Each structure stands twice: as structure tokens, then as C-alpha cells.
Length: 105
Image 1 (cartoon, one colour):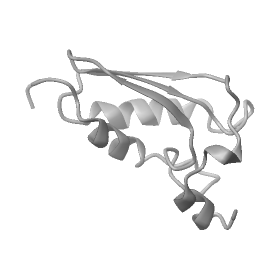
Image 2 (cartoon, rainbow, N blue to C red; image 1 turned 45 degrees about the vertical axis):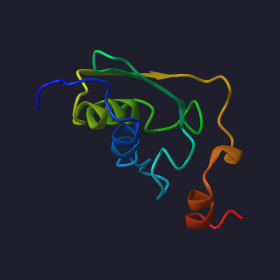
Image 3 (tube, rainbow, N blue to C red; image 1 turned 135 degrees about the vertical axis):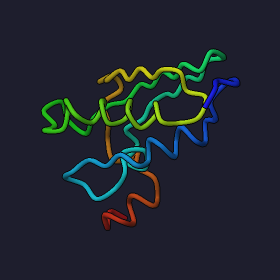
């Protein structure tokens, strides 16, 4: 589909939500692993994300899966995913849905 402007933030979030940490049955968006989504007029999307721990076994593949999911969204011309460690992730970043799914209330 031709590029027609800024990608939809909702569509980008929906794409990110298709990615799951293989050890946790909740998508990474609901886990609170996405810190920032920057949408640009030329269709570029930049994402800052973290992982539950620096030694996460999925540290290599999750950012790639996020990038590939975002690149499928209409109007996205490219996606860049950067892993950051500050601030460190903690359980308070999880959505209510994630807490419910993991019985963490």
C-alpha cells in the first residue's frame, strides 16, 4: 500500500500486541515493555522497549519480532526498535489485563 502519511498509533500498538514473550502468556505491550512509540510524517516508527530482565532468553528475538510486526502496518516505511534499560522494568508497568491473566493482583 502506498505511503499516505503518519502511521496510526492504534495500528502500531495492535501490531506490537501480537508479539508475546515466550515465557509469559501476555503480549509485550500489556506487560509494559514498550516505553515510547514515535511516529514520523515520512512513515518511520521508532520504538523504545525494554525486557523483563537483562538476561532475558528472548533478548535477541523480541526486538526483531516487534520491528517486523510494525513494518506490516499501513503507512509504515521503516521501523527501528531500541532496547533500553533505564528505567528498569518492574511489575507496576503491567496493565490490569496482564495482571489478571497472570493472577498478580
